Amino acid sequence: MPSQQPSSNWQFDVPTTGSKRLPPAARSFESLAHQGYGFEAAIADLVDNSIDAGARSVVVSFLRDTGERGGRDRLVGLLVIDDGEGMDEVGLDTAMTVGGRETYAPGALGHFGAGLKAASLSHADALTVISRTKRSPSAGRRWLTARAQADFSCDIVDATYCQSLVDRYDGIIGWHGTIVRWDQVRTFETITAGQTDRYLDDAIERLETHLGLHFHRFLARDGFHIDIVVEDVHTREELDHRGVEPIDPFGYRVPGRPGFPRTYVAPVEGVGDVPLTAHIWPPKSPLVAYRGIGPLAERQGFYLYRNDRLVQAGGWNDTRSPEGHLALARIAVDLPAEPNDVFALTVKKDGVQVTPAFARGLEKAATTTGHTFTEYVHEAEVTYREAAKRRTEVKRAAVIPPGKGIDPKLKRTLRDELPQLDGDDPIAFTWAKLDVPVGADSADLLFTIDHKERLVVLNKDYRHAFTGGRRGGSNDAPVLKSLLYLMLNEIFQKERVWANQTDKVALWNSVLVTAVRAELARAED
Image (cartoon, rainbow, N blue to C red; front, side, top):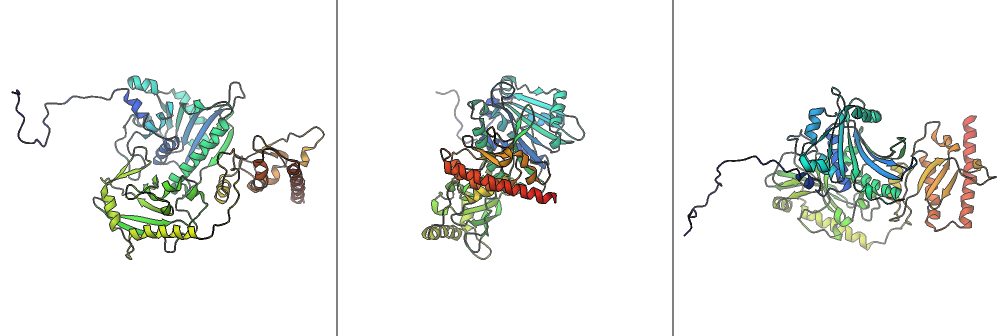
């Protein structure tokens, strides 16, 4: 017979006999670094912190050792620099403590107090944060994964080095700001010889799209911008510089159906009325905001915002299954500001989990004029089907994508207007002294092409004709570059340059150089 008889009554509270403190084991840091953050989502989490700190300028800088001083061409690290209010030593300690921040201001993008550490250590084995405020000097802290997993030891960064790094970026930081530094970035260390350019083109393209989409409401405001640069770690020269443009997932010119967008109100238990702004995209749209942000099947459905930051870009949250006929349906939802049990943000801020209360609210959602949300879904499907029956629109030939040296806004327009050849190295532009055969005169050429490297080399002796006397930048002369991009794209698509194509290049050079000289002569009169 058992020594203790089980209680016949259910105990609604578990009885206890005391408590003891069980601090986290150091190896819990290992689980923090394996949260499954994608590269773009990790950078976005750092940008969240910059915005919460009041930053108006955020720069993501890839640090590159070109190998010109010995060694191999490689990426050695990454920085995220902002001009926010910064942190003193107490603030740094809080920021570097897992879950150290317990409260957030209303409207803040931070949520769990783990993003900086989890996002960074998911990709780098060393995380350094250096910051200064108006009232405190530069200070820094560093986490090394190996040491953190051993005993949670966080390094105090030498004050002299902190100040020197802040001084290096004084054009951004000024009196206050923060630098997040990643070293030993695991992906960077897997790049094989000769593939750095290809990696950067792909990585920056994905990052530019992700940040442009998820922060599009912030980027559309005056006074806030995000830039992505590639910096020579030795000379500090900017090898590439792209300003991130907003990608509005509702940024069509004309709606796909009259009467849209419409706002439906869903009564959700536990939350109250939730407005749903429903859109129907124009069918067969070529815009990047429609086709360039991922597979269309994944981009239909709900776009959920938390404090103006997009935290879910498409998906039906188990309220229905995605299908091709709903590709035009997108609904903007601003999550309630107050904490609730219906909408739960994921740690990585890449989705929202909802309870069945949301689905029940959708069933009752309607406009003030009586249109139901169910009718909206049907109208989106009908719009798609009607467009599929119509004659196919004129298709433009696919082109090699634009690359370095082309202004980001121009690049975005080219991608909106022309289908891109997937997997092709982009066409880049640079100003340089032309390399011409002996006996030839570089003054007779405006440009040359490096067919193998997909590079258009512009004659730097004529640069002043296109910059209006101003100092040129990497993305200057957009009119000239766009024309040459359109003219030369077909030539770059060929495996080799044939005689007739060489003659075309010679013809274009002759005409353009004459035009440039005429323009310069007019300026002198």
